[in-house]
Image (cartoon, rainbow, N blue to C red):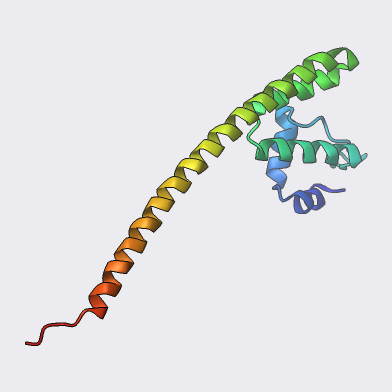
Amino acid sequence: MTIAEVSRKYGLTADTLRYYERIGLIPPVPRTGGGIRDYDEESCGWIELMKCMRKAGVQIEALIEYVTLFRKGDETAGARKAILIEQRNQLMDRMEDIRASIERLDKKIERYEQEMTAAEKRLQKMQKSPRPEA
């Protein structure tokens, strides 16, 4: 696939795809005889993985290290697994922080709803009560 096709498929700009390759976030993409990038299934798999990991907030540095280790071969499997475990733990911590923030926001929203309900009841009472004539 061309860079334009991959760009459309994954919603990433061609510049982003080139950047990912340049910094080592994805391994070098195969090229045609004329030097044009020719994304294959493996390249697309790397893009999917990196897009998913970046969307989750995984640090670019950790992902670059992971790809670097991957390219060194099977003897780095333990180190790669350790990176993934560490990133997962960080995501779990962030998820807990987000859960706690959502819970706190829910309580604040509930207080506003209670206050609004009380104010609405006061307004209804005012509308129902007879007004003094002038």
